[in-house]
Image (cartoon, rainbow, N blue to C red):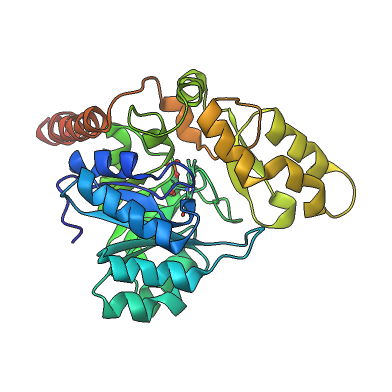
Length: 318
Ligand SMILES: Cc1cc2nc3c(=O)[nH]c(=O)nc-3n(C[C@H](O)[C@H](O)[C@H](O)COP(=O)(O)O)c2cc1C
């Protein structure tokens, strides 16, 4: 359905989803995704899509994240740029993508909507999305407010959805891929694991920090604002948590200077790990190297095949 060799997708990542990473994932047989809003304007997105096309002749997608932002975003213009570019796969996330479906469908675009609950998956199916990414509580970024892990979400999705789905959140190795397939998913979507690859366009210190980190090194911020985000647990995230723990409702103005997107972007560029906040998922606890995308994808697929044919196969023949 996505025209890819291996069932592995690289989820949209703000400031990380540039042509270097997306093309490397696609060249390795997965589906790379450019992050639409990482580009400052729809025109810049068109240029990035053209740049990615020069780096791969394989399919790649564009992510359109519709979330509350500090600065208003011209979403319709980004959607139009995607249509005009001839991109054939879009990952939507954040709010309900319904307003964007008519132009996407008219352009023959396959829409994968990222959802953190079964009710949102069912809604996405009902309004005509072609596929969903089921983002469990483990995930980096916005896990929603229900706190349901993939051990429950994936079998629920398998029971209730008619459209295909990807397992997303907490995945990064062959065991995860085999488990996701066993729980009914058609493939996996990874964010955090792809940050710690040679081609991810971020500072080496960030990648190294992920190798050193354990599964305890993420924090859930913005809980008091009903807009939970899983980020790396650095001093800035801890400061945000302190402010959120203060008595009375959290005022976004109090945390805004700490969490500005520009600081997160600078952190990725200069490797100053305490400059701002950066999204990271619990899978950091299972990351212990910085391979190329090709090495990573080949390894994950080989591990999963070995588990399915050997370990699980032997259980049946015993
Ligand atoms: C640094 C970073 C930035 C992200 N930015 C976005 C984004 O802009 N839009 C989006 O839909 N998801 C975003 N995500 C979430 C990923 O697409 C994916 O759903 C998530 O990382 C899956 O969980 P995992 O990190 O455990 O693999 C981001 C994740 C990371 C790690």
